Image (tube, rainbow, N blue to C red; front, side, top):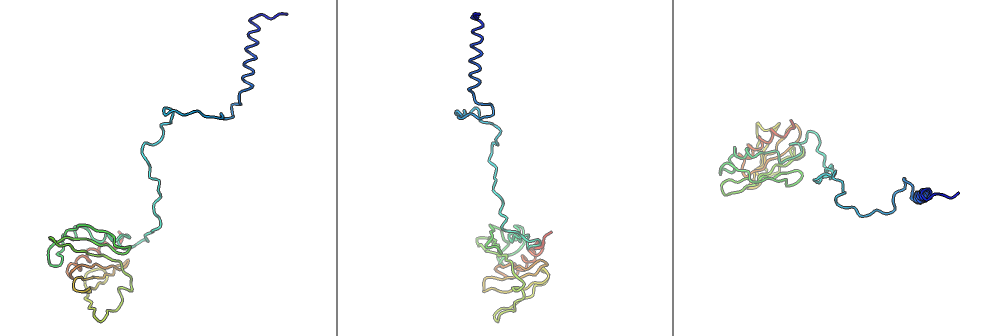
Length: 193
């Protein structure tokens, strides 16, 4: 029996669709090639700013109860220098400060046109208990820390070494009066709150 044109067209369309379906890859297989992606299709869910993903430096661990919380540059504050006469010249003005080493901090203080460096340094029990040398005269300093003494370091520096509950430190300035005063202020900050 002859097929109508319409029926023949329907069968032909069905065969073509079957052939296309049979030749196409399964839905679970990814396409072999990906065409270029236009900028308009890039997802906009990314953050607009960069995030610092570097890890903190955990190589330096400050032990609990460390002098000045582990930062000797917190031993003295700007206001301390304005309350003390430096080298008999006048009250100081803090110009800068910086860690000189892991166990010391230097403060640059101006008095008029003259600049002085005042140093706060951590010490050990051995430094504190070491007997004086023959040319060294130790002055007892009362009212600073648990115990303290001062020593002239040549003609231009005076160091006060202080014992507090959590360690030892010194303050070195150009003269005994400012060294003793600043050591007393620093001793109040030496122990953690």
